[in-house]
Image (tube, rainbow, N blue to C red; front, side):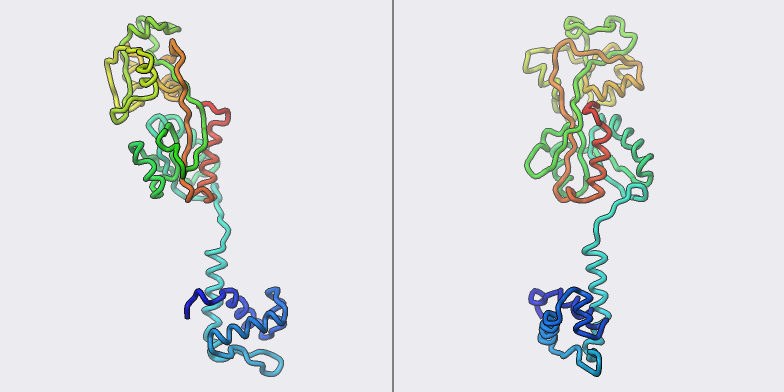
Length: 303
């Protein structure tokens, strides 16, 4: 028999008849009238080629064929009810789920410690796996389910087909060591141009700040190029170099290193940090909680 021609609601009718042994009582138990139940029983008899339930005295007794079907029909209905139609449930307080988050090293230093603090209070059994990969691989990772959430500055992910939510606006600041021999509490344009600079080029790419400088013909002397932002913490702490970085990184470096952060001597465009996710997890209650938790880390829109 082709399943496409079988109304699965008839299994509910069969189960009710097997339980109540009466067309009237079975119909009442599932909200069907007696004529509707009789019509459904007629369809079952035709489809299965058996009388199924036969009037014997005051009740409808199952035929041998119907008796064989009672257990598997009941099991099929339990599977549909318990697994197919089960309402999604996620309790962060008891969950042991692992989420994978794609974020650059700045995010590892700024976002992840905050998220862990929140998890300790609300979801002590939830685990986080932080991933790093080239920007061009991020979309494939989200589509494949390798990554649950991407958090950071990912201009390539602003595309149709992904959900996106702004988390905060990230301004740029200059970092110098606290006991810098030339630069004090303020940084002038003259001092900026005279200093040696350290810059970050992940995978050899220019960052937003470098694009801004090139567009305006500003060419500071770059003495050092590194591939990771967090490498700047020991470098700036122990040298006379200047580095211009997003505010969230500058604040982490000030917290843990011999570093001061100073406003740039000219207005630099801020970058916006977003979280991105794939439509396939948009309705998932656990992912919804994760995104909400990440959003709550930045309630005022600042890093």
